[in-house]
Length: 99
Image 1 (cartoon, one colour):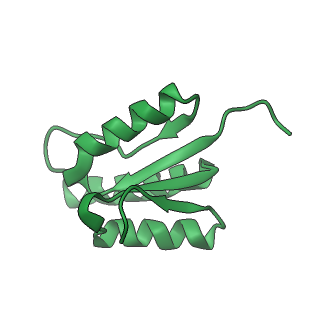
Image 2 (cartoon, one colour):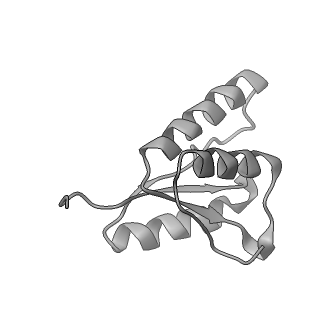
C-alpha cells in the first residue's frame, strides 16, 4: 500500500468548466491529486484541440480513476471517447449525474 494520494482525472464538456472547477476544489480539499482539462480563453484551433485531446488521454493514464462531470446527464462525443479510453485502460469511471 502506497502513501501517495489518489489521483483522479476530471472529464467533461468544456461547457461545464464551472462545475469541473468545483469538483476539482472538492476533491483537492479531500486530499486527492486532480488532473483536469486545460482551460483556454479562446476556442482552440483544430490543431490545438487535437493536442489537448491527446494530452487529456495521457492524463487519464496517470489517474487511478476518472470522474465525469455531466450536469443533467449530458455526455458529449469527446467525453464518450474519454470514457471508452478509460474503460479500456481499466480505470474506474464515475459520473456526477445519472446518465
